[in-house]
Image (tube, rainbow, N blue to C red; front, side, top):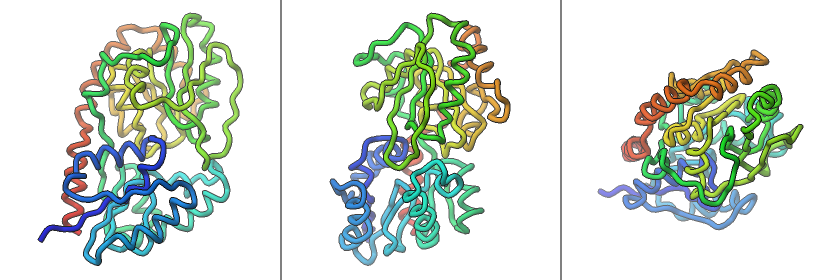
Length: 331
């Protein structure tokens, strides 16, 4: 008997960030073997569709996969992907109403579903410990090397020849203040280099304060088509986050041949392995020293490029999709 496997497509109505990329890439591999239920609604209307309308579109024997942190509480035959637990661990990073809702809702949902997927072992251990969930499977993010590669062209944006790059949402978790402090410590040593910050503030995060503007450029949200070139032309990608459930920009940058510098927060060391520089969040000057060392040493950048291109072979959307498909059919 053919199983009725359904993807909760609420994420398709939102702008693409890490969770939406994950859902979209997996759906591209398994979508022809199941059906995707979509909505155009966002915010409260999107939540209402997910909780009340989506369940009516399922059969009693349907298996639902919710790939982006939320799903309908009514459906027990469900697999849920939890990308991180930052609203539970650090509610101060989020708007109060969102943090309160998430802290009440997510534990209930996680305990009702049949299986929880996480993008990293780091998040898996947190889910097991904090949510008391028994079945958790790691389903890592991947990277499409036909799109993200060293020869990628940059067309829309014009930047100085040399720039340090940050890609991500503008939220407290990303430690942008720490990045800018490090930049101000080293910028006079690299007068031909800029800091480029690509991303926008989401509506669920608390505001981020910035200081200084010397050779710093903000480019807001970057379209998917422009990301590969943005990575490929950067001197180095820096992701200084206090916590990450995975850190998708890291493997995208490595696939584009760009050296990466990351913090020791969350899953970042797990994802990077020995293919990037890892700085200690507890050491005030560690990030500045890592950036200075990378920009000053051409051979180091070449070595990190080679290691990164080798490292990304561990991350495949297709392998992750097949693992998810196999698990859904076992529910």
